[in-house]
Length: 331
Ligand code: KG4
Ligand code: ZN
Image 1 (tube, rainbow, N blue to C red):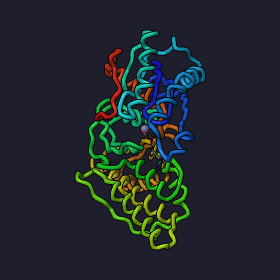
Image 2: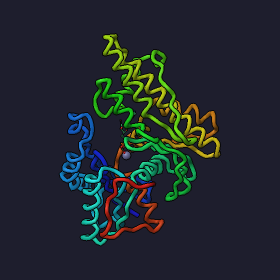
Image 3: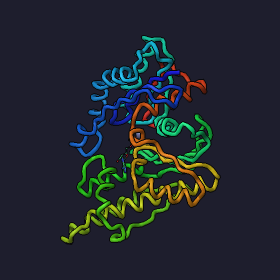
Image 4: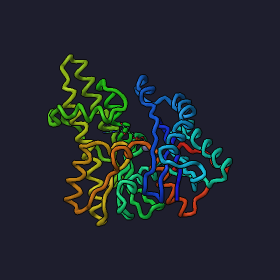
């Protein structure tokens, strides 16, 4: 069964074709990062307008490189929630138009379920149940993936998401957007023990708080500026990354180990090599095998939406033309 996936929830316009939820035929992504970089973050209005311009070209590219036409597609899966509302509306309305004109079934997909489904493409043998950390620019969720379409939230970031914290810390350190890869690069030259950062605890067992950690970094930067003292930016980046990675990796390993289940990293932050390395160490200690998607499927893409859409379709999920996008929605 061939699913066409469409993704436009943030700053990537993407289309992809996936067979039976796991076999990737094509994945086209038009990134808007260069246009948003100028402003140090995503500008929602610009994102919406660029999605309008990019949707048809990425769709054509995805169909062409898969070697298929719309007539070969069995269903259209689209990210309907959560995300930037104007951005989501472009993809959702495009998908509705496509389904109206072709008669194809329409399947709404939750963006975070998409990030989890990226794992199924990279790891054909991986099946639920497992414990997943979905860490992106907008969310950091520890999920019990009970089945392909059944999820339980074990814990979450109660304030800033992990990626958001990387982006904000990068900005105060004078680095570019997106901040995650920049921090990761700079941290390689630093000594994480040069700066002491707090280990903030949130309410629930698997909840995390990044706001306190981010503020501690900002305070160090401002104090150094005020006193005219030199700042070792690389070491501060390394200290921040080490602390953030520890918060995430320790909870993932514990949640998976306690349940005797495999563990998985996904979402944009799963591209972080320090996180992968530390999660690997801790998961090994907890007896949990660890999975993550190939790099190209960690950040936003439509292949993960097509994969999630396949499983949602099998579970009976369909939308009609009354489908509306939602900026927030529980998984
Ligand atoms: O999943 P994603 O592409 O988009 C959202 O759904 O938000 O995640 C984007 C986030 C950004 O905050 C970005 O800084 C972060 O993922 N990110 C990273 C790395 N690469 C991307 N964070 C840490 N280390 C990285 N290597
Ligand atoms: Zn995402």
